[in-house]
Image (tube, one colour):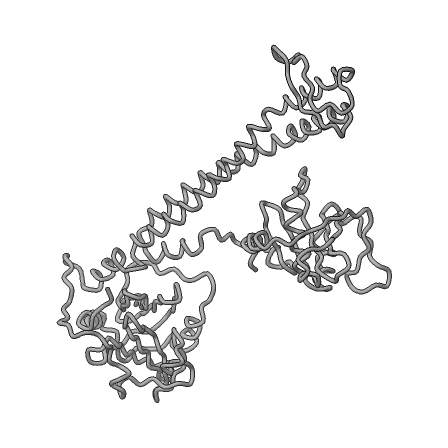
Length: 473
């Protein structure tokens, strides 16, 4: 519920704003802003919220977090009204439009807070009503730079179209001031900015994350169970080699003594392969399973740590009692600080399952990545027969590049090339140490050696997932 006109009058009378200086502007979100005021021996923080269903202006006694990125309207206010003095703060009749007159040096500004749930706005004008800027730019209302906003002179422009009601100041128990009561009330009941609404949003978000993590761990454990039976694959190879004399060309089954367990065993054979080749195939599967088991268990442990971290973060968010701070934590959840090297690196960067993929979008970026950001064992990819980006996969010590990461990098190479419209293409890849700069060639041009070939079909789903892994600079 937004403030009614009687509550606004009571709030303004308690605040007694004339004579206060505006010292700071903090914009938390696109519809919540605070002015830090000092005067008469005290400091106040004036909260202005244009949130639908919770439009209001009052003193807040909770910390107001600033946005991670500078927001346009806050930057505008800083340039105009910071260090300005409030000369008047009044409501225009009973229309829920608050006018605040501010003098900053020789300049005079009018701040209009229209606290209508269906059309709230914060408009700043010059003395003659010329709009300098608005929190919400509404061209049809003329609430854009250069427009005019003079609600005092236009009844149609200042009257809110609402049913006739008898308004009263809501009764909130306690001996505090009305500003203190209303600040606490909105923290609990303020629509989308109430604690309960925000906590429910947190719970829903974490349920989705929990489900994804549980599904991932379930797949990994199923794979682990398969890998743990790897010894059987070796046993199959041994049994085939021990029965070479009993297998005739064209046989599709071998029934033989199982000398690893009581009884006999029946193994399917591939009539197109020699018995020795089939035994070697089982041995190869055994070796891969054994080498992959350790890495798989490491992934499961990492998933368990992520699950524990998720629960701790959930408890931390649900324990937060300041709705504005909780809103900020929700907004920034999952955003990792960008390391300095990531901010400076040219081109595009993607952090994909702990692998770093870099994309140069021009000859200059390709050349810069080659010179400063890759080393000998990093992998280089490029599309055949078309101009395009150099894509690099940074090597991880003791790790070979998984097929999934190679396919991700290949999709990026096709997408950032002139052949993207084909939907597929051939590319080659090789470690950076096998690249040789073309003598007297254009900037960034290299000649690969010992390259391998890869055919890629562009996968839209894979590209969408990669966009979520992109490192913002």
